[in-house]
Image 1: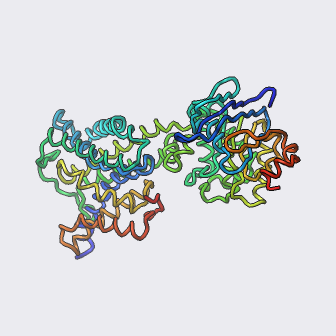
Image 2: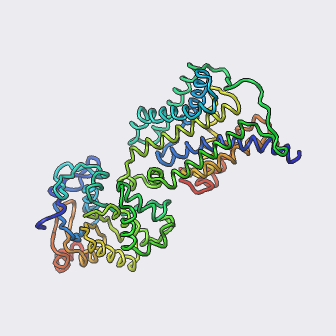
Image 3: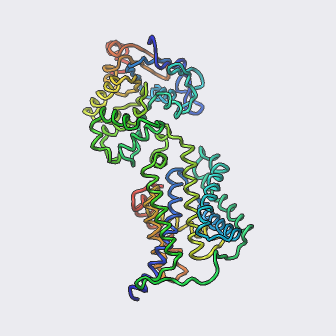
Length: 237
Length: 290
Protein backbone atom coordinates (compact mmCIF):
# COMPACT_ATOMS: atom_id res chain seq x y z
CA UNK A 1 0.00 0.00 0.00
CA UNK A 2 1.04 3.59 -0.55
CA UNK A 3 0.66 6.32 2.05
CA UNK A 4 -0.66 9.02 -0.27
CA UNK A 5 -1.78 7.23 -3.42
CA UNK A 6 -2.62 9.13 -6.60
CA UNK A 7 -4.77 6.18 -7.69
CA UNK A 8 -6.49 3.56 -5.60
CA UNK A 9 -8.64 0.73 -6.88
CA UNK A 10 -10.62 -1.17 -4.25
CA UNK A 11 -12.66 -4.34 -4.66
CA UNK A 12 -12.99 -4.01 -8.42
CA UNK A 13 -15.44 -6.53 -9.89
CA UNK A 14 -16.37 -6.45 -13.57
CA UNK A 15 -15.64 -7.63 -17.10
CA UNK A 16 -17.03 -7.74 -20.62
CA UNK A 17 -20.73 -8.32 -21.11
CA UNK A 18 -22.11 -10.59 -18.42
CA UNK A 19 -18.88 -12.42 -17.54
CA UNK A 20 -16.70 -11.03 -14.75
CA UNK A 21 -12.96 -11.09 -15.28
CA UNK A 22 -12.02 -9.06 -12.22
CA UNK A 23 -13.14 -10.65 -8.96
CA UNK A 24 -12.20 -8.02 -6.39
CA UNK A 25 -8.90 -6.39 -7.38
CA UNK A 26 -7.20 -3.87 -5.07
CA UNK A 27 -4.25 -1.75 -6.10
CA UNK A 28 -2.69 1.64 -5.46
CA UNK A 29 -0.19 3.82 -7.27
CA UNK A 30 1.82 6.49 -5.47
CA UNK A 31 3.05 9.77 -6.91
CA UNK A 32 6.03 9.34 -9.25
CA UNK A 33 5.89 5.61 -8.71
CA UNK A 34 6.30 2.91 -11.35
CA UNK A 35 3.91 0.08 -10.51
CA UNK A 36 3.92 -3.16 -12.49
CA UNK A 37 1.06 -5.62 -12.90
CA UNK A 38 2.08 -9.14 -13.90
CA UNK A 39 0.37 -12.50 -14.07
CA UNK A 40 -0.49 -15.30 -16.46
CA UNK A 41 -2.73 -14.85 -19.52
CA UNK A 42 -6.35 -14.28 -18.55
CA UNK A 43 -5.39 -12.93 -15.10
CA UNK A 44 -7.23 -9.67 -15.81
CA UNK A 45 -4.15 -7.45 -16.17
CA UNK A 46 -5.27 -5.45 -19.19
CA UNK A 47 -8.85 -5.48 -17.96
CA UNK A 48 -7.80 -3.57 -14.82
CA UNK A 49 -6.31 -0.81 -16.98
CA UNK A 50 -9.42 -0.68 -19.15
CA UNK A 51 -11.62 -0.46 -16.07
CA UNK A 52 -9.55 2.42 -14.67
CA UNK A 53 -9.81 4.25 -17.98
CA UNK A 54 -13.58 3.83 -18.21
CA UNK A 55 -13.54 1.38 -21.12
CA UNK A 56 -15.21 -1.28 -18.99
CA UNK A 57 -17.89 -0.67 -16.40
CA UNK A 58 -17.30 -2.10 -12.95
CA UNK A 59 -20.16 -3.91 -11.25
CA UNK A 60 -18.67 -3.30 -7.83
CA UNK A 61 -15.77 -1.48 -6.28
CA UNK A 62 -14.33 1.99 -6.44
CA UNK A 63 -11.62 3.77 -8.40
CA UNK A 64 -10.30 6.94 -6.81
CA UNK A 65 -7.96 9.27 -8.66
CA UNK A 66 -6.69 12.17 -6.56
CA UNK A 67 -9.82 13.01 -4.55
CA UNK A 68 -12.44 11.93 -7.07
CA UNK A 69 -14.30 8.68 -7.55
CA UNK A 70 -13.87 8.16 -11.30
CA UNK A 71 -15.61 4.77 -11.59
CA UNK A 72 -18.17 4.96 -14.40
CA UNK A 73 -16.72 8.11 -16.00
CA UNK A 74 -16.37 8.04 -19.80
CA UNK A 75 -12.78 7.99 -21.20
CA UNK A 76 -12.84 11.58 -22.48
CA UNK A 77 -13.64 12.83 -18.96
CA UNK A 78 -10.90 10.65 -17.46
CA UNK A 79 -8.34 12.02 -19.95
CA UNK A 80 -9.33 15.52 -18.86
CA UNK A 81 -8.70 14.80 -15.18
CA UNK A 82 -5.10 13.71 -15.76
CA UNK A 83 -4.81 10.05 -16.75
CA UNK A 84 -3.20 9.00 -20.03
CA UNK A 85 -3.67 5.55 -21.55
CA UNK A 86 -1.54 3.77 -24.15
CA UNK A 87 -3.34 0.69 -25.50
CA UNK A 88 -1.35 -2.38 -26.48
CA UNK A 89 -2.29 -2.43 -30.16
CA UNK A 90 -3.52 0.16 -32.65
CA UNK A 91 -2.08 2.91 -30.50
CA UNK A 92 -1.26 5.44 -33.22
CA UNK A 93 -3.23 7.13 -35.99
CA UNK A 94 -1.40 5.36 -38.80
CA UNK A 95 -2.36 7.67 -41.65
CA UNK A 96 -1.63 10.87 -39.74
CA UNK A 97 1.82 12.37 -39.31
CA UNK A 98 3.75 12.03 -36.06
CA UNK A 99 3.07 15.66 -35.24
CA UNK A 100 -0.66 15.28 -35.96
CA UNK A 101 -0.74 12.23 -33.67
CA UNK A 102 0.72 14.36 -30.90
CA UNK A 103 -1.72 17.19 -31.66
CA UNK A 104 -4.63 14.76 -31.34
CA UNK A 105 -3.31 13.81 -27.90
CA UNK A 106 -3.70 17.48 -27.01
CA UNK A 107 -7.19 17.80 -28.51
CA UNK A 108 -8.61 18.98 -25.18
CA UNK A 109 -5.84 21.53 -24.78
CA UNK A 110 -6.81 25.04 -25.81
CA UNK A 111 -3.42 26.65 -25.24
CA UNK A 112 0.18 25.70 -24.66
CA UNK A 113 0.23 23.27 -27.61
CA UNK A 114 3.68 24.38 -28.75
CA UNK A 115 5.16 23.98 -25.27
CA UNK A 116 3.62 20.51 -24.92
CA UNK A 117 5.00 19.45 -28.31
CA UNK A 118 8.41 20.78 -27.31
CA UNK A 119 8.35 18.73 -24.08
CA UNK A 120 7.48 15.54 -25.96
CA UNK A 121 10.19 16.16 -28.56
CA UNK A 122 12.75 16.71 -25.78
CA UNK A 123 11.71 13.36 -24.27
CA UNK A 124 11.75 11.59 -27.67
CA UNK A 125 14.32 13.39 -29.84
CA UNK A 126 14.10 10.63 -32.48
CA UNK A 127 10.63 11.85 -33.35
CA UNK A 128 11.72 15.36 -34.35
CA UNK A 129 13.02 14.42 -37.79
CA UNK A 130 10.08 12.04 -38.33
CA UNK A 131 7.42 14.56 -37.40
CA UNK A 132 6.10 14.96 -40.95
CA UNK A 133 6.05 11.19 -41.62
CA UNK A 134 2.87 9.09 -41.27
CA UNK A 135 3.00 7.20 -37.97
CA UNK A 136 2.15 3.96 -39.80
CA UNK A 137 5.48 4.13 -41.65
CA UNK A 138 7.60 4.08 -38.45
CA UNK A 139 9.30 1.11 -36.80
CA UNK A 140 7.62 -0.61 -33.84
CA UNK A 141 9.76 1.18 -31.28
CA UNK A 142 9.27 4.60 -32.84
CA UNK A 143 5.56 4.00 -33.08
CA UNK A 144 5.52 3.22 -29.38
CA UNK A 145 7.26 6.55 -28.76
CA UNK A 146 4.52 8.30 -30.73
CA UNK A 147 1.91 6.48 -28.65
CA UNK A 148 3.62 7.53 -25.41
CA UNK A 149 4.05 11.06 -26.69
CA UNK A 150 0.37 11.31 -27.63
CA UNK A 151 -0.64 10.18 -24.14
CA UNK A 152 1.74 12.70 -22.55
CA UNK A 153 0.47 15.75 -24.47
CA UNK A 154 -2.07 16.69 -21.78
CA UNK A 155 0.57 16.49 -19.00
CA UNK A 156 -1.10 13.54 -17.21
CA UNK A 157 -0.17 12.74 -13.64
CA UNK A 158 -0.65 9.04 -14.26
CA UNK A 159 0.12 7.01 -17.36
CA UNK A 160 -1.46 3.58 -17.95
CA UNK A 161 0.62 1.36 -20.24
CA UNK A 162 -0.78 -1.88 -21.63
CA UNK A 163 2.12 -4.23 -22.49
CA UNK A 164 4.33 -1.50 -23.94
CA UNK A 165 7.05 -3.95 -25.03
CA UNK A 166 4.78 -6.57 -26.65
CA UNK A 167 6.17 -7.65 -30.00
CA UNK A 168 9.30 -5.50 -29.76
CA UNK A 169 12.88 -6.76 -30.12
CA UNK A 170 15.03 -6.86 -26.92
CA UNK A 171 16.90 -3.75 -28.07
CA UNK A 172 13.64 -1.80 -28.32
CA UNK A 173 12.37 -3.25 -25.02
CA UNK A 174 15.31 -1.72 -23.17
CA UNK A 175 14.68 1.56 -24.96
CA UNK A 176 11.02 1.51 -23.92
CA UNK A 177 11.93 0.78 -20.28
CA UNK A 178 14.36 3.72 -20.39
CA UNK A 179 11.56 5.92 -21.77
CA UNK A 180 9.30 4.86 -18.90
CA UNK A 181 12.02 5.87 -16.42
CA UNK A 182 12.35 9.22 -18.22
CA UNK A 183 8.59 9.71 -18.05
CA UNK A 184 8.67 9.05 -14.29
CA UNK A 185 11.61 11.43 -13.93
CA UNK A 186 9.37 14.04 -15.57
CA UNK A 187 6.98 13.63 -12.61
CA UNK A 188 4.45 11.15 -14.02
CA UNK A 189 3.34 8.03 -12.13
CA UNK A 190 3.17 4.89 -14.28
CA UNK A 191 0.98 1.79 -13.98
CA UNK A 192 2.06 -0.82 -16.47
CA UNK A 193 0.90 -4.26 -17.42
CA UNK A 194 3.73 -6.45 -18.66
CA UNK A 195 4.13 -9.83 -20.26
CA UNK A 196 7.91 -9.76 -19.69
CA UNK A 197 7.44 -10.36 -15.96
CA UNK A 198 11.08 -10.56 -14.88
CA UNK A 199 12.07 -7.36 -16.65
CA UNK A 200 8.97 -5.60 -15.35
CA UNK A 201 9.71 -6.62 -11.75
CA UNK A 202 13.35 -5.62 -12.10
CA UNK A 203 12.50 -2.08 -12.94
CA UNK A 204 9.18 -1.40 -11.17
CA UNK A 205 9.20 0.25 -7.75
CA UNK A 206 6.34 -2.03 -6.74
CA UNK A 207 4.33 -4.70 -8.43
CA UNK A 208 1.15 -6.73 -8.15
CA UNK A 209 0.80 -10.33 -9.18
CA UNK A 210 -2.71 -11.16 -10.41
CA UNK A 211 -4.19 -14.56 -11.21
CA UNK A 212 -7.77 -15.39 -12.23
CA UNK A 213 -8.89 -11.83 -11.55
CA UNK A 214 -7.64 -11.74 -7.95
CA UNK A 215 -4.61 -10.28 -6.15
CA UNK A 216 -2.05 -13.03 -5.50
CA UNK A 217 0.94 -11.08 -4.27
CA UNK A 218 2.20 -7.56 -3.85
CA UNK A 219 5.56 -6.07 -2.96
CA UNK A 220 8.64 -4.31 -4.22
CA UNK A 221 9.90 -5.58 -7.55
CA UNK A 222 13.07 -6.93 -5.94
CA UNK A 223 11.16 -8.80 -3.18
CA UNK A 224 8.82 -10.45 -5.67
CA UNK A 225 11.76 -11.47 -7.86
CA UNK A 226 13.41 -13.08 -4.81
CA UNK A 227 10.23 -14.93 -3.75
CA UNK A 228 10.64 -18.59 -4.74
CA UNK A 229 6.93 -19.38 -4.83
CA UNK A 230 6.20 -16.44 -7.13
CA UNK A 231 9.18 -17.37 -9.28
CA UNK A 232 7.92 -20.93 -9.65
CA UNK A 233 4.33 -20.01 -10.32
CA UNK A 234 4.61 -16.92 -12.50
CA UNK A 235 8.17 -16.40 -13.66
CA UNK A 236 8.88 -19.79 -15.09
CA UNK A 237 11.03 -21.09 -12.21
CA UNK B 1 -13.26 12.51 -84.95
CA UNK B 2 -10.92 15.46 -84.46
CA UNK B 3 -9.51 16.64 -81.18
CA UNK B 4 -11.90 19.59 -80.80
CA UNK B 5 -14.99 17.42 -81.25
CA UNK B 6 -13.59 14.98 -78.71
CA UNK B 7 -13.03 17.82 -76.24
CA UNK B 8 -16.41 19.45 -76.86
CA UNK B 9 -18.62 16.39 -77.05
CA UNK B 10 -16.93 13.99 -74.65
CA UNK B 11 -14.19 15.45 -72.45
CA UNK B 12 -15.88 18.67 -71.27
CA UNK B 13 -19.21 16.96 -70.44
CA UNK B 14 -17.18 14.14 -68.86
CA UNK B 15 -15.31 16.52 -66.59
CA UNK B 16 -18.56 18.27 -65.60
CA UNK B 17 -20.24 14.94 -64.84
CA UNK B 18 -17.06 13.82 -63.07
CA UNK B 19 -17.05 16.81 -60.77
CA UNK B 20 -20.69 16.10 -59.84
CA UNK B 21 -19.80 12.47 -59.08
CA UNK B 22 -16.72 13.65 -57.19
CA UNK B 23 -18.76 15.83 -54.81
CA UNK B 24 -21.19 12.97 -54.22
CA UNK B 25 -18.40 10.42 -53.78
CA UNK B 26 -16.71 12.63 -51.16
CA UNK B 27 -19.87 12.40 -49.05
CA UNK B 28 -20.00 8.62 -49.47
CA UNK B 29 -16.32 8.23 -48.63
CA UNK B 30 -16.71 10.41 -45.52
CA UNK B 31 -19.59 8.27 -44.23
CA UNK B 32 -17.55 5.14 -44.95
CA UNK B 33 -14.41 6.54 -43.38
CA UNK B 34 -15.68 8.32 -40.30
CA UNK B 35 -18.96 6.51 -39.59
CA UNK B 36 -18.18 3.16 -41.24
CA UNK B 37 -21.28 2.31 -43.19
CA UNK B 38 -22.52 2.55 -46.79
CA UNK B 39 -24.99 5.44 -46.93
CA UNK B 40 -27.63 4.45 -49.47
CA UNK B 41 -29.64 7.65 -48.89
CA UNK B 42 -26.83 9.82 -50.19
CA UNK B 43 -28.27 10.19 -53.69
CA UNK B 44 -31.74 11.07 -52.42
CA UNK B 45 -30.22 13.56 -50.00
CA UNK B 46 -28.61 15.20 -53.04
CA UNK B 47 -32.00 15.20 -54.81
CA UNK B 48 -33.53 16.90 -51.77
CA UNK B 49 -30.83 19.60 -51.91
CA UNK B 50 -31.48 20.15 -55.62
CA UNK B 51 -35.23 20.54 -55.06
CA UNK B 52 -34.68 22.89 -52.11
CA UNK B 53 -32.86 25.22 -54.52
CA UNK B 54 -35.90 24.94 -56.83
CA UNK B 55 -38.19 25.84 -53.93
CA UNK B 56 -36.15 28.96 -53.19
CA UNK B 57 -36.01 29.94 -56.87
CA UNK B 58 -39.76 29.44 -57.27
CA UNK B 59 -40.61 31.08 -53.96
CA UNK B 60 -38.39 34.16 -54.09
CA UNK B 61 -37.41 34.45 -57.73
CA UNK B 62 -33.73 34.50 -56.79
CA UNK B 63 -30.91 33.26 -58.99
CA UNK B 64 -30.38 29.50 -58.45
CA UNK B 65 -26.65 30.00 -57.80
CA UNK B 66 -27.49 32.46 -55.01
CA UNK B 67 -30.06 30.05 -53.62
CA UNK B 68 -27.51 27.21 -53.51
CA UNK B 69 -25.74 28.19 -50.25
CA UNK B 70 -29.10 28.36 -48.42
CA UNK B 71 -30.13 24.95 -49.78
CA UNK B 72 -26.75 23.52 -48.77
CA UNK B 73 -27.23 24.72 -45.21
CA UNK B 74 -30.79 23.37 -45.11
CA UNK B 75 -29.62 19.99 -46.44
CA UNK B 76 -26.84 19.91 -43.84
CA UNK B 77 -29.59 20.42 -41.24
CA UNK B 78 -31.56 17.55 -42.76
CA UNK B 79 -28.44 15.31 -42.71
CA UNK B 80 -27.82 16.04 -39.02
CA UNK B 81 -31.53 15.47 -38.33
CA UNK B 82 -31.45 12.08 -40.07
CA UNK B 83 -28.43 11.16 -37.97
CA UNK B 84 -30.26 12.06 -34.77
CA UNK B 85 -33.53 10.46 -35.75
CA UNK B 86 -32.24 7.21 -37.25
CA UNK B 87 -28.55 6.42 -37.50
CA UNK B 88 -27.50 7.47 -33.97
CA UNK B 89 -29.80 4.84 -32.45
CA UNK B 90 -28.11 2.09 -34.46
CA UNK B 91 -24.53 3.18 -33.72
CA UNK B 92 -23.76 0.27 -31.43
CA UNK B 93 -25.45 -2.32 -33.63
CA UNK B 94 -24.09 -4.14 -36.66
CA UNK B 95 -23.30 -1.79 -39.57
CA UNK B 96 -25.61 -3.69 -41.92
CA UNK B 97 -28.61 -2.47 -39.88
CA UNK B 98 -27.57 1.13 -40.46
CA UNK B 99 -27.09 0.42 -44.18
CA UNK B 100 -30.61 -1.01 -44.44
CA UNK B 101 -31.97 1.90 -42.39
CA UNK B 102 -30.33 4.26 -44.88
CA UNK B 103 -32.23 2.50 -47.68
CA UNK B 104 -35.44 3.27 -45.78
CA UNK B 105 -34.34 6.87 -45.36
CA UNK B 106 -33.65 7.04 -49.12
CA UNK B 107 -37.21 5.91 -49.87
CA UNK B 108 -38.65 8.42 -47.39
CA UNK B 109 -36.70 11.34 -48.84
CA UNK B 110 -37.73 10.37 -52.36
CA UNK B 111 -41.36 10.08 -51.31
CA UNK B 112 -41.23 13.60 -49.82
CA UNK B 113 -39.74 14.99 -53.06
CA UNK B 114 -42.42 13.22 -55.13
CA UNK B 115 -45.28 14.37 -52.92
CA UNK B 116 -44.13 18.01 -52.86
CA UNK B 117 -42.74 18.48 -56.38
CA UNK B 118 -44.29 15.62 -58.33
CA UNK B 119 -42.63 13.09 -60.61
CA UNK B 120 -42.23 15.17 -63.79
CA UNK B 121 -38.95 16.62 -65.00
CA UNK B 122 -38.39 20.24 -64.00
CA UNK B 123 -35.75 22.89 -64.68
CA UNK B 124 -34.43 25.87 -62.70
CA UNK B 125 -34.61 28.28 -65.61
CA UNK B 126 -36.34 27.87 -68.95
CA UNK B 127 -34.91 28.52 -72.40
CA UNK B 128 -31.89 27.36 -74.35
CA UNK B 129 -28.37 28.21 -73.18
CA UNK B 130 -25.77 28.62 -75.89
CA UNK B 131 -22.20 27.67 -75.01
CA UNK B 132 -19.40 30.24 -75.20
CA UNK B 133 -16.40 29.34 -77.33
CA UNK B 134 -12.89 29.65 -75.94
CA UNK B 135 -10.29 28.87 -78.63
CA UNK B 136 -12.76 26.44 -80.16
CA UNK B 137 -13.60 24.74 -76.88
CA UNK B 138 -17.28 25.27 -76.22
CA UNK B 139 -18.34 25.48 -72.64
CA UNK B 140 -21.61 26.70 -71.16
CA UNK B 141 -21.62 29.21 -68.31
CA UNK B 142 -23.24 26.71 -65.97
CA UNK B 143 -20.59 24.11 -66.82
CA UNK B 144 -17.84 26.59 -66.05
CA UNK B 145 -19.41 27.55 -62.71
CA UNK B 146 -20.00 23.91 -61.81
CA UNK B 147 -16.30 23.20 -62.26
CA UNK B 148 -15.23 26.36 -60.44
CA UNK B 149 -17.56 25.68 -57.50
CA UNK B 150 -16.38 22.06 -57.28
CA UNK B 151 -12.75 23.19 -57.15
CA UNK B 152 -13.56 25.75 -54.41
CA UNK B 153 -15.52 23.19 -52.34
CA UNK B 154 -12.88 20.46 -52.66
CA UNK B 155 -9.99 22.81 -51.83
CA UNK B 156 -11.90 24.22 -48.84
CA UNK B 157 -12.59 20.69 -47.57
CA UNK B 158 -8.97 19.59 -48.01
CA UNK B 159 -7.73 22.67 -46.13
CA UNK B 160 -10.27 22.04 -43.38
CA UNK B 161 -9.26 18.38 -43.01
CA UNK B 162 -5.55 19.09 -43.23
CA UNK B 163 -5.11 22.17 -41.11
CA UNK B 164 -7.90 22.67 -38.57
CA UNK B 165 -8.36 21.08 -35.17
CA UNK B 166 -11.79 19.63 -35.99
CA UNK B 167 -10.76 18.57 -39.48
CA UNK B 168 -7.89 16.59 -38.00
CA UNK B 169 -10.31 15.14 -35.44
CA UNK B 170 -12.43 13.85 -38.34
CA UNK B 171 -9.36 12.23 -39.89
CA UNK B 172 -8.37 10.77 -36.53
CA UNK B 173 -11.83 9.25 -36.11
CA UNK B 174 -11.63 7.81 -39.61
CA UNK B 175 -8.15 6.42 -38.90
CA UNK B 176 -8.76 4.85 -35.49
CA UNK B 177 -12.10 5.56 -33.75
CA UNK B 178 -11.14 3.91 -30.45
CA UNK B 179 -7.91 5.84 -30.15
CA UNK B 180 -9.76 9.05 -31.05
CA UNK B 181 -12.00 8.49 -28.06
CA UNK B 182 -9.04 7.65 -25.79
CA UNK B 183 -7.38 10.89 -26.87
CA UNK B 184 -10.32 12.91 -25.60
CA UNK B 185 -11.75 13.77 -29.01
CA UNK B 186 -15.48 14.42 -28.75
CA UNK B 187 -16.65 11.75 -31.18
CA UNK B 188 -20.31 12.85 -30.93
CA UNK B 189 -19.55 16.37 -32.12
CA UNK B 190 -17.17 15.06 -34.76
CA UNK B 191 -19.97 12.85 -36.10
CA UNK B 192 -22.37 15.80 -36.29
CA UNK B 193 -19.72 17.84 -38.07
CA UNK B 194 -19.23 15.01 -40.55
CA UNK B 195 -22.97 14.89 -41.32
CA UNK B 196 -23.00 18.68 -41.77
CA UNK B 197 -20.26 18.45 -44.41
CA UNK B 198 -21.97 15.48 -46.08
CA UNK B 199 -25.21 17.48 -46.33
CA UNK B 200 -23.47 20.59 -47.69
CA UNK B 201 -21.63 18.69 -50.43
CA UNK B 202 -24.58 16.41 -51.22
CA UNK B 203 -26.84 19.41 -51.92
CA UNK B 204 -24.17 20.93 -54.15
CA UNK B 205 -23.82 17.67 -56.13
CA UNK B 206 -27.60 17.45 -56.57
CA UNK B 207 -27.87 21.07 -57.66
CA UNK B 208 -25.04 20.76 -60.20
CA UNK B 209 -26.67 17.67 -61.70
CA UNK B 210 -30.03 19.46 -61.76
CA UNK B 211 -28.73 22.63 -63.42
CA UNK B 212 -26.68 20.75 -66.01
CA UNK B 213 -29.47 18.32 -66.91
CA UNK B 214 -32.93 18.50 -65.35
CA UNK B 215 -34.57 17.90 -61.99
CA UNK B 216 -36.15 14.49 -61.47
CA UNK B 217 -37.22 12.79 -58.29
CA UNK B 218 -35.05 9.76 -59.14
CA UNK B 219 -31.96 11.69 -60.23
CA UNK B 220 -30.05 11.07 -56.99
CA UNK B 221 -30.93 7.40 -56.86
CA UNK B 222 -29.52 6.88 -60.37
CA UNK B 223 -26.38 8.76 -59.32
CA UNK B 224 -25.81 6.44 -56.36
CA UNK B 225 -24.02 3.65 -58.24
CA UNK B 226 -21.48 5.88 -60.05
CA UNK B 227 -20.86 7.75 -56.78
CA UNK B 228 -20.15 4.50 -54.91
CA UNK B 229 -17.99 3.29 -57.81
CA UNK B 230 -16.03 6.57 -57.67
CA UNK B 231 -15.50 6.32 -53.90
CA UNK B 232 -14.30 2.71 -54.12
CA UNK B 233 -12.19 3.36 -57.21
CA UNK B 234 -10.35 6.20 -55.48
CA UNK B 235 -9.94 4.37 -52.17
CA UNK B 236 -12.58 4.39 -49.45
CA UNK B 237 -12.01 7.05 -46.81
CA UNK B 238 -9.83 9.21 -49.09
CA UNK B 239 -11.24 12.56 -50.19
CA UNK B 240 -8.64 13.03 -52.94
CA UNK B 241 -9.42 9.47 -54.06
CA UNK B 242 -13.13 10.29 -54.33
CA UNK B 243 -12.32 13.28 -56.55
CA UNK B 244 -10.02 11.19 -58.75
CA UNK B 245 -12.55 8.33 -58.88
CA UNK B 246 -15.41 10.73 -59.70
CA UNK B 247 -13.46 12.29 -62.57
CA UNK B 248 -12.46 8.91 -64.01
CA UNK B 249 -16.02 7.53 -63.86
CA UNK B 250 -17.53 10.75 -65.26
CA UNK B 251 -15.10 10.96 -68.19
CA UNK B 252 -15.28 7.20 -68.83
CA UNK B 253 -19.10 7.28 -68.92
CA UNK B 254 -19.17 10.13 -71.46
CA UNK B 255 -16.41 8.59 -73.59
CA UNK B 256 -18.00 5.13 -73.51
CA UNK B 257 -20.62 6.42 -75.97
CA UNK B 258 -17.89 6.39 -78.63
CA UNK B 259 -17.64 2.60 -78.40
CA UNK B 260 -20.87 1.44 -76.77
CA UNK B 261 -24.59 2.15 -77.25
CA UNK B 262 -25.54 4.98 -74.87
CA UNK B 263 -27.93 2.68 -72.95
CA UNK B 264 -24.83 0.97 -71.53
CA UNK B 265 -23.41 4.21 -70.17
CA UNK B 266 -24.49 3.59 -66.61
CA UNK B 267 -23.37 -0.06 -66.74
CA UNK B 268 -19.82 1.24 -67.07
CA UNK B 269 -19.72 2.41 -63.44
CA UNK B 270 -20.88 -1.03 -62.40
CA UNK B 271 -18.13 -2.68 -64.43
CA UNK B 272 -15.48 -0.37 -62.94
CA UNK B 273 -16.79 -1.15 -59.45
CA UNK B 274 -16.61 -4.93 -60.00
CA UNK B 275 -13.16 -4.87 -61.60
CA UNK B 276 -11.76 -2.65 -58.85
CA UNK B 277 -13.18 -4.76 -56.02
CA UNK B 278 -11.75 -7.89 -57.63
CA UNK B 279 -8.30 -6.56 -58.51
CA UNK B 280 -7.49 -3.86 -55.98
CA UNK B 281 -10.07 -3.57 -53.18
CA UNK B 282 -8.15 -0.74 -51.48
CA UNK B 283 -8.73 1.49 -54.53
CA UNK B 284 -6.23 3.59 -56.44
CA UNK B 285 -5.07 5.56 -53.39
CA UNK B 286 -5.02 2.74 -50.86
CA UNK B 287 -8.16 3.33 -48.87
CA UNK B 288 -9.81 1.04 -46.35
CA UNK B 289 -10.80 -2.48 -47.33
CA UNK B 290 -14.55 -2.90 -47.04
